[in-house]
Image 1 (cartoon, protein in one colour):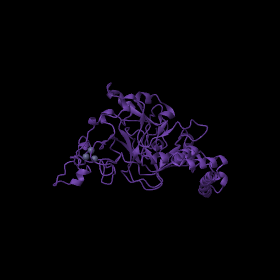
Image 2: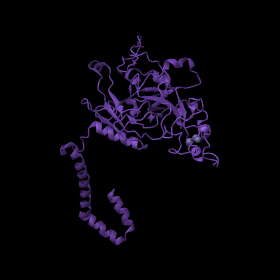
Image 3: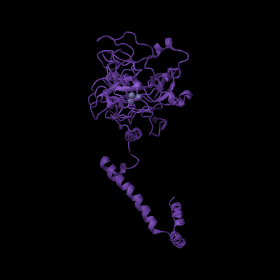
Image 4: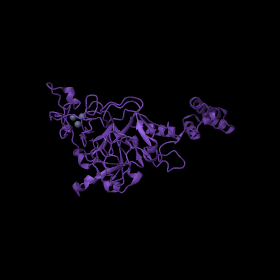
Length: 400
Ligand SMILES: [Zn+2]
Ligand SMILES: [Zn+2]
Ligand SMILES: [Zn+2]
């Protein structure tokens, strides 16, 4: 490469100069060698200084970044490409070098896992192309600046009854009036255990408003909360043998305020029928896209309406590590902005149900639609293909 570059440069030089240069090249140009050597030396020099401090040993150089560190670097880099906060992996419990099947280990089916921070992928034909522009609902907020009205609010889609995107929303306040999904600070307003199945229609690329000014675009902003994937400690000796809680997710950098939106579940979009065939551990990475339990679907299954699930075995993001709890501190709502509601592929968006202290494990209820037993009781009948639940909540179904 250096030679080619030099030859290009020669074209621009006078012929004599070029000749002289060519001769010195034949003789062996010391100058160039020196330059190359210096470059080669300077790189590891910096490397030694930074790594040395961390490991206290020069022999730990280059090839000895642990798998946990490699995963942290790779996932943080992929997240950063979408503007999202870092993701790190830690294990303070035992010597497992990270969750299985994510790559960077010569013995595993490496590199088959793809990190997708914000958007699921799909190979289904009908979903490959986005709907035409005229299929999208869009608002006129900010288009006509009316002196009498609160122009700023309209510009930022702050008046839900005036914003066309929020017009078909079913969200209402306690007086049954149309309500915005988010507060001025971008917190989800309906952070309550009793409300499930909420769908939010956010503004989209065809609206006039912008990502950070519009109060109706929160789930589509990059995740601002840094996440740590950590090896969980089993709750009890007994649980450690059978609960298999494995790795979990938490935030050690800050308190996560109630209503904070944390990002959406990603993976591969597959037909529900395909997802239902996945069993055991494979099935644990599947999230159904309408948020309903599969058992409830069959009756309303209209033959013309396709329903989907997201499978996060081979691609996905940090949310695949969220463990189950019958009384979780996170929950999910659906949000639509880059597709149309009729496609049935909303984003599944995680938000905080309560203020989550620094370092507390984040959990979600895998069976949010199924009622909990009264305090002190557990369901007697454990459905087939379920495991015993060790969430430790006061109200626990007893299975997961
Ligand atoms: Zn609007
Ligand atoms: Zn809009
Ligand atoms: Zn808007």
